[in-house]
Image 1: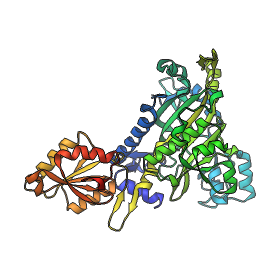
Image 2: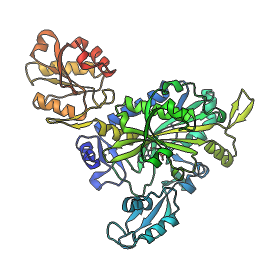
Image 3: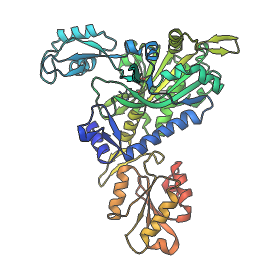
Image 4: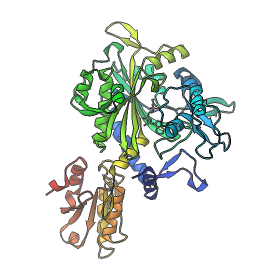
Length: 495
Ligand code: GAP
């Protein structure tokens, strides 16, 4: 299954469309359609419930998208958030120089300056892949979108990450929530990057959704992680710098990885493990996940150590999550630039300290894409999307077997009753087999069919998407049965 095929499927079924397609669309922007909106919202709800609502140590904020320029001066984004840009002198096409060198020459160029990249291009006679023209000089291109605010046209920026407003609001949030270290602040929302060459469908777009947690820890207590037991025995594939030299990742538990010194701290390991646990809960195969450490030269300007969680797409391993140790970089920078000290009063020592930060950063669109790839299966007689029931756009479809004899009325009655509790779909058009196939293709895990027997004894057939098994159940039991199935009960275990 290629990225083009999944993009075509997503468009055909109403998950994702190119944005503004009637005007030729805009590269790097995507619109979520009716089914995609439901699936994306379900993923976001799971993120928020799992990492914020169900935890005592994390609270959330919802900050503004258009942001004061000083925020980005202090964070370093105005100076350092750049990609190397090169332009063809003949056809004018622009490329991200590092990706071009990687793709065309098979060399990794992380951390190499624009000047060095330019020399590589010249020495190896690298030409424009479109027209074979000569390439020009390589320059740093800032990825932030700017805008003008109000009639005076004050310059401001669309946030390129959700993280920064968590730092600028650190003191306020800590004070109102009365959280003691260690604790986290989360945010879910849009981020914008003026990518030079957006590509691979939702993988690299110019507008996307991030879910980020800034988790604040006493700098001397990075290994004091009281919840570490939750992930200690979780097996993960580890691809540290050492492993990357050898070329092979190694399978070990999070606890073993910590004991052998792979991770810089227990808190860093904890958050990586927790996200692997979460991805598995959402249906990703744990053997298609690996933890890859950034090489020194790949690290962002703010990071002491960063690990990506990569997913094995059919086109190769790609980052779906980044988890950085940002140290006290951001709080200190905002204190310096704003002149307002951002710190935490440590009751134990009686001193104000600047906490360290572990930052799990999740791209929602990349997770959406991984879930689509994982769920999509083409079988002999059907295409099926094996989404977890709690993620599916519709949990249930209700059908009358035929469009007469009072069956549509009964089916609508059941639909009205159940749609209050579960996202439901009603359909009476086409043969029953075709209706099942349509639901399989969009991931609806269960279908209820109303037939002649329903009117006689109040039972319906309940069909399972994955096994295609059918069972006769009482209408009055449907709510309870569906709730159990959504929580993970196996269909074959039903009486
Ligand atoms: N605050 C840290 C940060 O933003 P990042 O590695 O640049 O780190 C984190 O981004 C995550 O955001 C990535 O793992 C990816 O899932 C998502 N992401 C980043 N750029 C993206 C883009 N252009 N399109 C879609 N998702 C993107």
